[in-house]
Length: 133
Image (tube, rainbow, N blue to C red; front, side, top):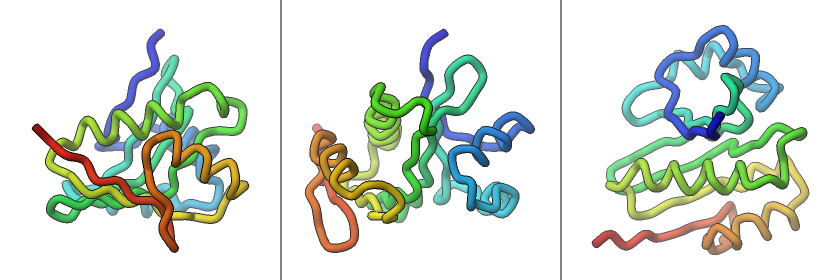
């Protein structure tokens, strides 16, 4: 089965279990209640399981990404990069991206990952400007 990146409109029972593994300290029910056209969750799904997810807030042409996380057992396989790339692609109206430095993982690893995804470091996270044709 293929790895698919999708926005989650509603969380199934299995999605809630998987999201709790991705974000153990997140109130998944409260997160589900906040979903709307400007507050979204994008996830990487493989074999009916969520392997990674991020939270996206859109305001005009700006996108703010928080809580980008890949389950431990799936890391270092390109899932996070693909999730980030597809999230940007699926939101072509956004041309200024900011990814929060959530401080959850090893900072050197996160910095290398973000640079590999063409983001520039700033004080509280990473930024990327996208030019559209």
